[in-house]
Image (cartoon, rainbow, N blue to C red; front, side):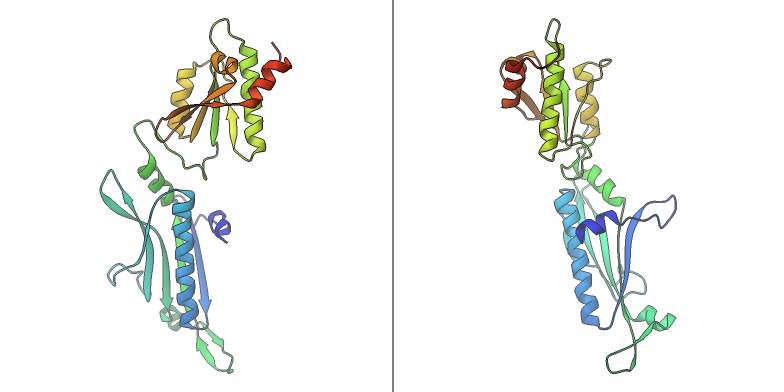
Length: 252
């Protein structure tokens, strides 16, 4: 159901923004109350499990609730740079107010005419803005691993007189290995830009992890991994590189 909520995004206000919205009707208030909290929990999971943003679930005041509704619940996030909170998503119990106004009735189990209890819930592309404000830094975006279209970018670092083709082949093989493991990886093989330019380019785009492969890495059977969130660097042994070097299968 969570995946369905993420994918169910519709353009309800034309050029203003995109959002996902749901409207439901129930026979009893208990059923409506239950769904309000179920949807609110799904929204919490989107923020915390996919966007890695801690949120607080709660109930809005009478002044802040949805106009005409019975009560409103929301998830609230915190923006560190501004010191302010921001509403992340809402789940409303509309009660029977709109059912009375528009005569939304049904026949209950006793064969009697009754009014429905309605809910409404939504989140919008505001989630993207919250993600940028919470995780971004002076270098650009910092994409959470779950939602990054590219999770790992692999950058060849060829030096003068180095085995350039061998390095490129090692990058391609590493990408294939990661892709087979279910990781969204790509290789930046563009020859018109320096490795340093590529580092800045992919840091600005917020790719979670950068892998560098140069002559020393090829010789030492390793790759250098650099995290986007804290710039931590680590040399990681890569058995596949040893196979590439020893087999001589790569074009030179």
